[in-house]
Length: 296
View 1 (cartoon, one colour):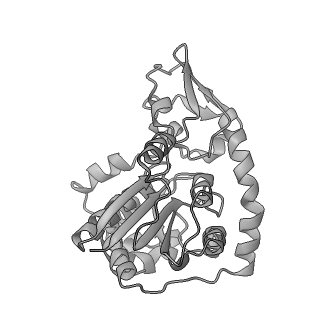
View 2 (cartoon, one colour):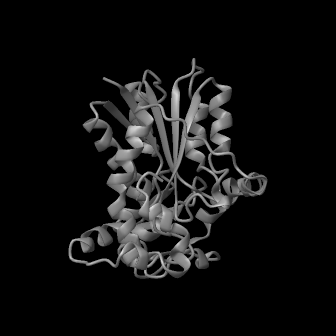
């Protein structure tokens, strides 16, 4: 029985959904699977249990959403806490709405360097496509198709990893450059947290504070207050039932109408989707190969 550790950071739910599907697929393949979500409360529990930086596994799979063409800070912090090892096999799975476009190709390179310095063998890279949660919305029918594909993509990913299939990508120079320049996001994300504001429609339910992966939100006399640990995951904005949280300066970043994958999943059962050819027409033609080829 292969032992597999899944390490996931997820903001608005796309990466967590794929992690769950991958866990299911690995268990069906007879694997013993342990999942670590990189959220402050869960990290504290893992540290007490001694499982936070445990590497006694055949495979470690790290999953994360692309933040400014790179991995989010919690993933880097987890890798920094890892002990050195002798060639533990590691797979990196990034999640982005833009897919494996050149602008994202170097999103895993910083993690690969950090892991390689400690002796880990990164043999597998893959990009999973999910709906846009920033700037503008993906059309709902296309978003539903992406959600439909998750179990298939997860099953094939599990097979490739367990078979030790080597899947590595050599990023283009321009991708490396833009990813390095975007490192500033690690600093500006903290500022993003401080620019968040609360509307009068806030019901003081505390859902944002309880859901923040970084515990960056504290309730003060019923009102949310934001600290300096924000990683700009946008979870608090989209999880608010009354849409009461908004960025004062960066309003353009938030998708109008919100971002609710749960709602889309519920609608799939009662929705007849267009053909894949129709779904990938026009501006969505870039994603045709990903939609039509389950192994990509």
